[in-house]
Picture 1: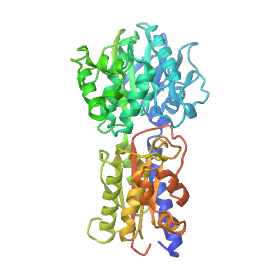
Picture 2: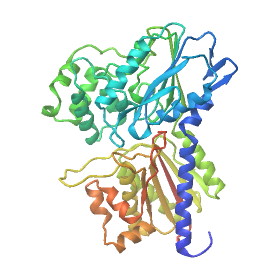
Picture 3: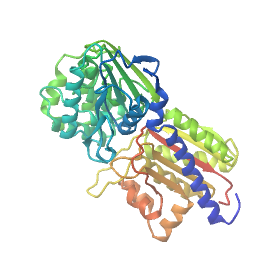
Picture 4: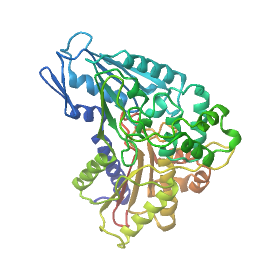
Length: 462
């Protein structure tokens, strides 16, 4: 790098953000769909399945997720406009800020932006979807578009369970730090559509799921709580999760009653057959794709790359501290490769909430960044930039994608007399990052493959 220290610091931050953005762009939902769905004359191929436009009655597109708008747009682009009247249509549940007009497929606002909880609007959209798939026949094809956030966007409470019950349970588990696997286990057992319910409702001759994974290991029964797959875990397992995280008197009585019943004890991960015919599911994008693209961009910019893979779990603040330790070791020549180096990491940590009456605004990526910043402050952050962001552009219940830890954030915090430890202690990291210039805001990215972290390490002189 050339120029003065300030210029080098800004350039390193810009490079880290460019690498992060390259990873997100690689999993753009519309691009992933148009790679998986191709049309040749009157033949449409979907992940190897051939659909004859002349022999197919209707192509119904349904689904849910933060990537739903881009996925639906990708279907329309791939299918084209020169199709038989009434051939293409459908409904996809998406966050309100992702709704836009499409020609054939309706995007339904199933929840407000930044509120990752089921709503009455989501229930209405899901009921509509269930009615549409049930009305299909043996000559019809149903395409199901699923992506991260689909669990909250596709709610259909089980008989005897109210939406308020599900909202309360979801909120309690999220605030207690339950993993996505645990959260989805409970959701499946409280739903009519999850755990294979959508597949069982479909009377189409062929039901094909296209999935953008936001879960470590791409388990099809966990992503969006598995609307096309029965899933693993019984009602008793779901109740055990609830009792592990939530005080007994806070569990809604109707939920406890349902999960205490023996039905559902033999659920398996076997693929579900639809009411009408064959069901197949295909993962078309995941965190590994984003990591590979980020690595290519880093190498293009002249950085040696060390990837920690896509399956990193843990507690956000602990992961942030560990990443900062690794960056310091690389900078000091105690870890390979030598600077200039780019360390990449994917996955999804959790946040443990502190007890406080004050504001708690932030997400796991912002928490991770502030924790990393605290560790760097102990040993000088010079030469190190850490970017942590949610690939969906939505970090927790905020409008931010994530945060940045570098010497510029530390300098601004010192100028404003802000102590990052005070904000981290109460999980109120967004105000700190916003005031110090360390907040990442992208708006909805229309994709979701968990989180992506980019750490650049150069010489200690900044």
